[in-house]
Image (cartoon, rainbow, N blue to C red; front, side):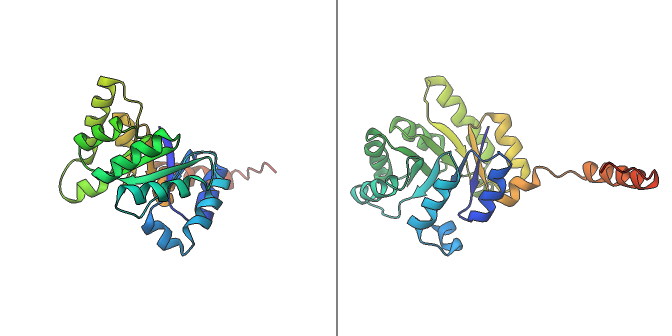
Length: 217
């Protein structure tokens, strides 16, 4: 499963990228606002930093305007994935932008039927929102599994990009049900390395090393 980082914070992306675990980046208007940066400027900086797809989202709601914004975003770098919402207008924009040779990430997916439409419209990525479904007491992981089944049934190449990841359990669940990609905030990705037994074992090893006066360099 590929790891995308869901942030527009350059320092956080750079830290994870140095470990070799960043396969791409996703941004949205809320993350751009949080960064305090100009969307074109910060997106270009992210694209220069990572090799994989960088999702940059349109803000228009009409198809023609989305297409115009998507074309402008796509000019930032070769690894831009234009992000459009899963609306009828968004699907129209997806189809046009895809046919022009752009990567397209269709976002705000909350049903398997929506994911099916996105695949037929030529989406590179479909972004089902797990956490937001959990918020209204629906099973976000079940949606990922349903989309996986449908795409496998018919050979759709659209990649399932699990989004709205809130916890390490979400990450594990996505890997188990076959998501192609997951995107999560830096702090969630960092928590994947943590385990109470790792901490306990390391503490004991360090105590024993001190008691035995073990020195390596």
